[in-house]
Image 1 (tube, helix red, strand yellow):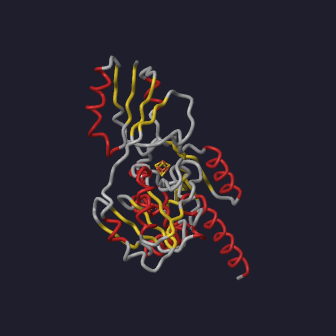
Image 2 (cartoon, rainbow, N blue to C red):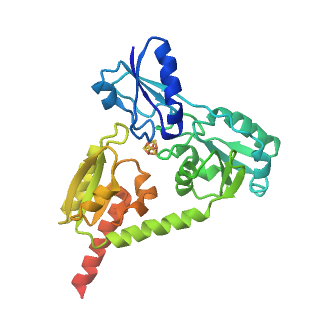
Image 3 (cartoon, rainbow, N blue to C red):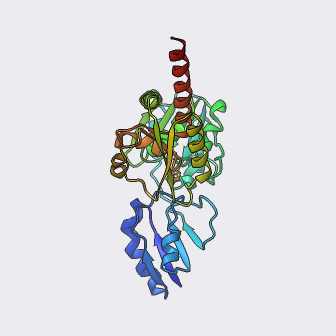
Length: 309
Ligand code: SF4
């Protein structure tokens, strides 16, 4: 069989070993060397262009249905659970905990739940909106497992590494949020980021209020491509007498966007995290669709105030 293997950045160091093992079974194997952001970013075009029979995507669960033969190889990581004892101080005042984690540790969610229950906590596990597939699992773009139980819990515990996943869940919830990092052996309350990111969002909106031309980012990544939204936003901007153009790329390069000096602001329709995490990488405001609507509302208000003077 002719195979294309695709690995997220953290697993690319294992590509050669997997390729050689599959070759031994008689397969003809290539490895995608392109950056990979998630199962939203399947290398189907590459697979088709080399006439692959199958794409094997490592490290993520299925994200969306595609018309290509894709096998998903999830990557479970057995994290040490000793850190849970240290997290008890941080959740001392909270009786009911919402527990979330990533696909790498989802197989440990029962053991983590059991630990907290043994220590007198009630544990609630929420359901994802749909891109994530398992109860308690969160993705950067699917924090349903947290947001859906915000009313039912006193605090959240995220078990796993890094800030990318818990940050999305934090910004979609209102309760105290504790990150328990098993490998860094660290417990951290991250509530302060809510205010920080709200301020950043406000800053972008204020900066974009004088914008007259908008570049709308439309990615060709199969799980992030949202042409309908891009066209709706373009029409909405033009309805207010402003200029808009849809800009297409697979992976947006911020230097190239900076070179497009005719645009005063950019609007994201790709991975929703771009308008949250990457705003420092570009000097022009990089807005979400909701932030764009706020900009247009404020523009209208300002125009009415000026007209009355
Ligand atoms: S957060 Fe972005 S990169 Fe991650 S799965 Fe969602 S769309 Fe893909």
